[in-house]
Length: 159
Image 1 (cartoon, rainbow, N blue to C red):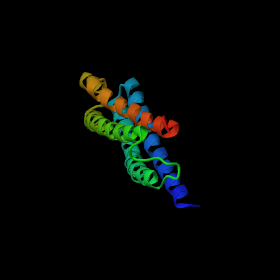
Image 2 (image 1 turned 45 degrees about the vertical axis):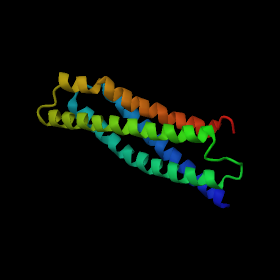
Image 3 (image 1 turned 60 degrees about the vertical axis):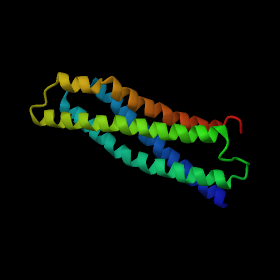
């Protein structure tokens, strides 16, 4: 296998980790909307923290090996290509949005854990935090943006 083949393999592996982690956290974020008990909400949001590890590793791998791929590409891709620039910008925006949304969801998870320890009764405050529009826009916006990067990587418009 050539250097390019290895770089492509590692880049795609990172893309699977990143996309998989984003989809898992997004799924847990959707599922908690239908739960009432703080213990269930705390558990589901807590499980989403494990997917954050995959997101971090995948984000690192996609950026490092993706940039390396562009510099090694035998097909004439370059850093000036519009799809490469758009992918990098969307990657940064998507991870920033997801990170901010994730921080807000972690605070919600901590509240849910506290409420679970105090009797595990439904809470209006917890429900409001789960439906906070800023958190939802950040989290789902990050998910959609990262999926947009994946579309750009597969489609490569203009290449």
